[in-house]
Amino acid sequence: MKDDAYSLILAAIEAGTYRPGDRLVESELAERFGVSRTPVREALQRLETQAMLVRDGRSLIVASLDHNQLAELYVVRAELEALAARLAARHATPEEVRVLAQMLTEDQKAVGKPEALARANKRFHHQIHLASHNRYLVQQLDLVHRTMALMARTSLAAEGRSETALAEHKNIVDAIAAGDGDAADRALRQHISMAWETRLKLEAAGADQE
Image (cartoon, rainbow, N blue to C red; front, side, top):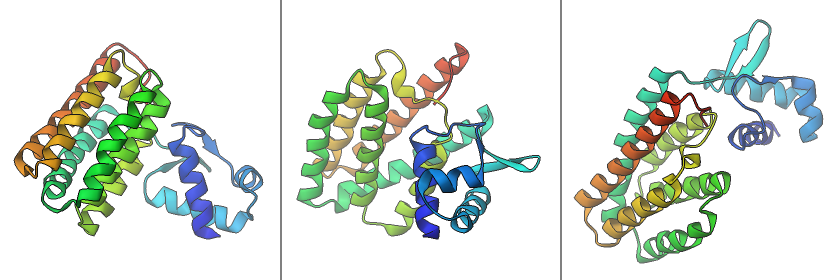
């Protein structure tokens, strides 16, 4: 039940139900998710330890990321994601490659729907992580993507970003399918670079981040 409470609260943060700055109240969470307060309390402590929540007086609120934290996160993400793509090009099974290709087709239906595309994007990247066949890398990438839930808005909400992001996804899949680790590495780095550039433009324009 403890892990269930943790997963439920984390999923709610990732879904945007609770956003950076929102206060999380133990009793309200217990009632919302239909669990007792003890596992909720333990889940909140765990999320605080992971820096997903921060103290505001006696309250716990959903953490937010400042510009420098975002920059650091994207640096680490680019390195780890690129490694995952390189390893996927080497180790992905034919079935895993086909699943990635099918995702490209399915995700086209989400163009113009930023929140749906953000969920699809997370699934796509996770599939690449799994295709790397390196459990320790997958663990580290899970941590990175969990922290990304603290962004207020998805860069996929920017005008035209959905289409270009999916084109970048195709380049990544093509390289993995060809078994070209160097190309997969480059394509993934380019994809992360464009996502970061888009977020910087949103930030410069004073837009809310997600």
